[in-house]
Length: 260
Image (cartoon, rainbow, N blue to C red; front, top):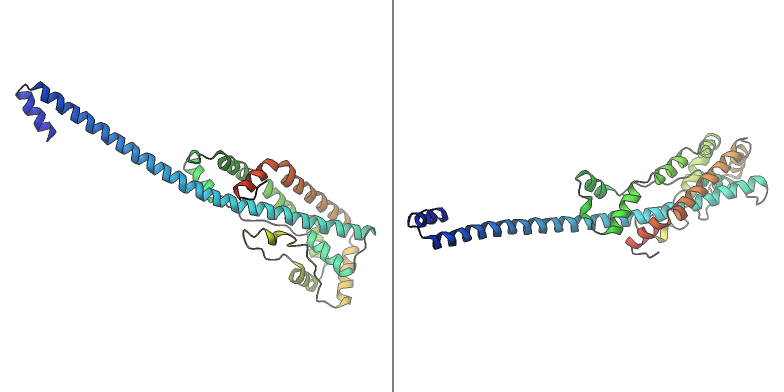
């Protein structure tokens, strides 16, 4: 329609009308570009909002899992120390509680990471959509540290874990797992992570069986050294989680709405 109008005006040499047609064309192109830009900006803002909400939820889970890991390792440290003090005679334990302490010293915690949103942002090159600097930098710091994997691997490969499984009879291992193992903790439940491993328990086994199992463990020449290694590794892990990473912990707690 515009082209036809311009052609007619050119033939008639109506320069004013031609100028008006030109302005209309330019204005139409400009408005079209602006509408396209506005639509693109709106879609970008919507994507940024969705990704920010998803990343926030992921980091709230990570904040809880981090606190859980910290509390859990404190329980493990307590058990390792109790077993060592029992062996040295500093704080003797009954055979039953000695078995429980050694067993709990072998335990470790690993959580599946909540990094799906972060990985998607990286793979699409859209990490810049996260305008909240605290949210963005916390995710980058958390998902690029190998600390949590190192802590889990040290627990899995701990020598005391091998000793307990090699020395303790199968029935005792089954009983200590059943009666004194990890308590179930629902995701996001902060109250339940406290003493999730360090709670009072007793084994439903004949005294003779308990005495024999404790004797087998105490007789192992490598047990003290293995417990010392476990204690030292867990102590280092707690320091790293609580002190070395204190700035990141503060950010995670803020994102989770738990203050500092």
